[in-house]
Length: 59
Image (spheres, helix red, strand yellow):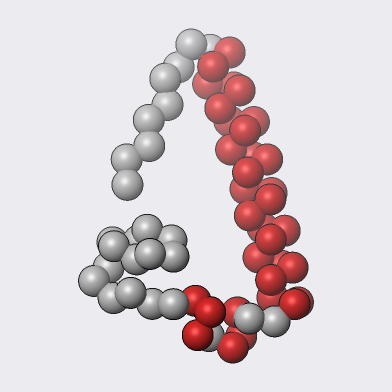
């Protein structure tokens, strides 16, 4: 399993070795995407809870 994202791979790819992923602009974009994802996930969890639905995540 990848130590960066948990994807099912045998390779242990280090994201910090990629120069394109190690600059301020890219980090800002990635942070914005991840923050929006957190917001959407919270909204979905609230929706499930209000309807009595148990959400499970299998990876």
